[in-house]
Each structure stands twice: as C-alpha cells, then as structure tokens.
Length: 208
Image (cartoon, rainbow, N blue to C red; front, top):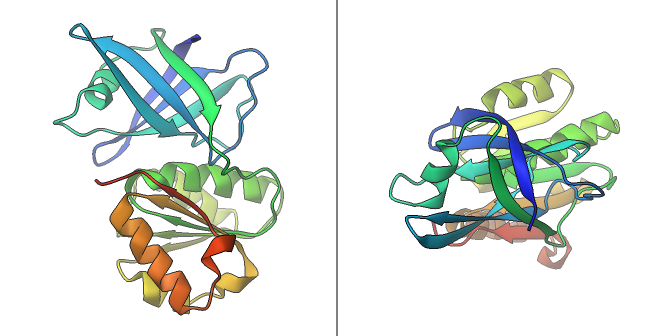
C-alpha cells in the first residue's frame, strides 16, 4: 500500500476538493479509473474510492473528493497539509479514456472530476469533447472555462433530456459519472434518444 505525498490540495466547488499526489513508480492509469484511499481515523479504518481527474498520471495525479460534512474520510482528507502522505491503492476500474476519439461525458456532482480529466485528454489529442453537467454550479469551474476556450463544448442543465436533444449523442463515445439518481436520469435521456446503453460507459457512485 504506497504512501503518496500530497502536492496540491484545492477547494474546487461546493463540498468538493481536488487532491494531487505524487504518482508511484510505474503507475499507469487513465481518467475514468479510480483509486482507493485508506486511513485510520480515531482508531477506525476508513476507506473511500475517488476517480482520477487529471488527464494523465505522469509524476503526479489528481483525484476529486466529495466532502460530506457528516462523513469521516472526506473531511479528514481536506484537513491534510501539503507534504503529508496518504495511503492510496489502485488504479481500479475498466472505464478509462486513453485515445478513444470524440467524447460525450455526463457528469453529476463529483462526477465532474473524471469529466474534466477526460475532456482535457481529449483536447490534448485534438478530439472534440462535450461535457453535460447536471446543474448550473459545477465544481472545477476554472478548468471548465479553460476547456471551453480550447474548443470543448460545456452544457450546464438540470434537464438532461433537453440537453441530449441539443446534441447528437450517436456521434460520440459516451461516459456517465455521478450518484445513482443522476446516472438513472442520464440513462433515461440517452435511451429516449435511441442510444444503446450497452455502448455507454457508466460509473455510479452509489446513493448520494
């Protein structure tokens, strides 16, 4: 279980933080995958899964953390200091954006983390990318603004069916990241648009 040094800790939105750590030697992962963080807090072992939100993992990588004030691990993580180490295992997960062409990413809540990582990698490879965020105040707002300046399409909407109608989802590789209710709404919207859900990469973070 590698102990990784924290190199950046940033508040990126409402109850959402980005934590960057040094990558272990020979660590290979892609946006869309996730890691497990393990810590002993008040004598109890706590674990949490967090998706990778950086476009690559060369030297360092970032994870986006939802900070539930009633939770344990999230608040503990954001109280760490630069230079401290945390226990990180992984990567895990079959969902990953390597060089998969044009991408459409639906993101709810902390799902914006993997969305910006995928989008940044896609633009770096000169692929078109669209992010649909379920709401009007997404975390990682600065990165979304930069992505828009670099040619990405950013859609903020509480009506996913309307958002899907405004684009042609059949032209993209489609990803969905978020809590269960958001995932179900995205699935319903894509199904109504005639998309075969077996072709969609979906990662549910469970109930909110």
